[in-house]
Length: 82
Image (cartoon, rainbow, N blue to C red; front, side):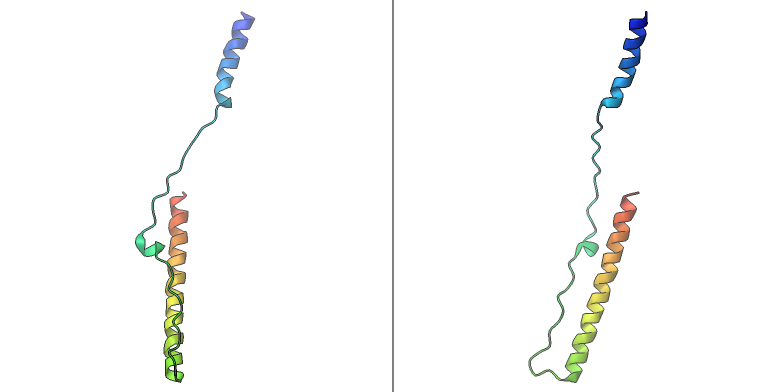
């Protein structure tokens, strides 16, 4: 009887030694979030101060848009992990 009890106890504990292979599938990012950032604009040859200002503003706006997309990507990734 004691052998049967030990065998039953061991058979109940053995599944605890098995490994679980869980795979998490992450959905693809929306195209609007996975788009790469733009390269900075360059000044044209013979640029004046107005051109410099235009390029600086365009580069700043592109940087702000890229940063916003990056933040949204991080939020989407964290939301999927819950």
